[in-house]
Amino acid sequence: MEIGEILREAREANNLSLDDIQEMTKIQKRYLVAIEQNDFHALPGRFYARAFMKEYAQAVGLDASELLSGFDEESIQTEEEESVQYTRLERTKRPRTAKSSSIFSLLPSVIVIILVIGIFFVAWTLYQKTLNGNNGIMEEPQENDEIIRNVDENEEGDQADTNDEDKGTDEADEEEEQKDEDDASGFSVVEVGEGNSPLSTLDFHYTGEQVEVAFEVSERTYIQFTGDSGAVFYEGEIDTGTETFDVSAEEKIYFNIGNTPGLKVTINGVELEYPVNANERIHQKMWVNLIQD
Figure 1: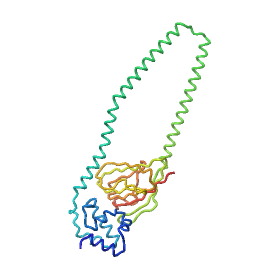
Figure 2: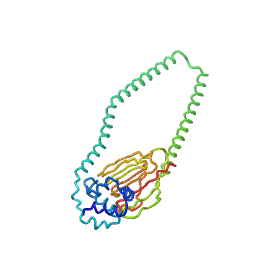
Figure 3: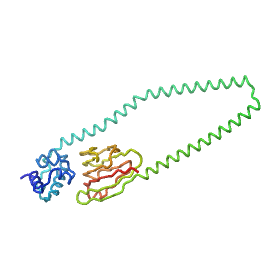
Figure 4: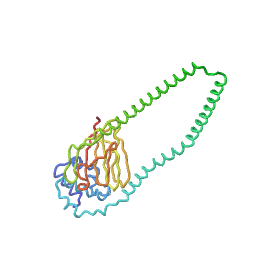
């Protein structure tokens, strides 16, 4: 009897449905169906095929080590998996190329605008000098005019000093508000998970309207990243690189990470510290509640 049949019979013996197993293990139903049908090529890769079957076995009360003792990981092909990764990397690089091209295409227009502004400024300066010279020849300054001019100049100087002080105060207030917003953002651990694949719960407090999640991948890992609305932001393996996601519409988000030492997660620039030591439990799952202050 093959592994898939053993797991299916154990599930049925425990009166459990595939939906129940999905809820217990957080493994997608289509992967569970593939395991029961011994269709291991449909799984994300060799490492995760073994990990998924181990979690399935534990959920139905079987000895995972004994069950997987004869499992041949080399039988799973990875060509399709590698093709998916290359496609994802190409898709990531293309927008950057397009962005660079758009910047260079605007460069000639910017140069023309700068030249026009420069010509206008030179012409205006020459005109002002000519106008002031004519006024000096036609009219001889009176003593009263000089006094009034000095008073106006003093008032203008005082007004400029006041404006500079107000501007400096406004900039300081803006910097202080930004600092307060940054200080207000942060994580707090609500519950620390247990077991081989701990499921933990955290709160993330933030201010403002936007919530952005960023991945920085240094080692190959599997990532399942979803929101409570049902949105799937990322699911699959990634070798190295960075990804960013806007999750402003979500109230909480879920992470299922296969290799925690190889993945750095930040939310609004604040790094998420894994509740369980990443070197002790490389496979971790987390719910993060997004709380706007």
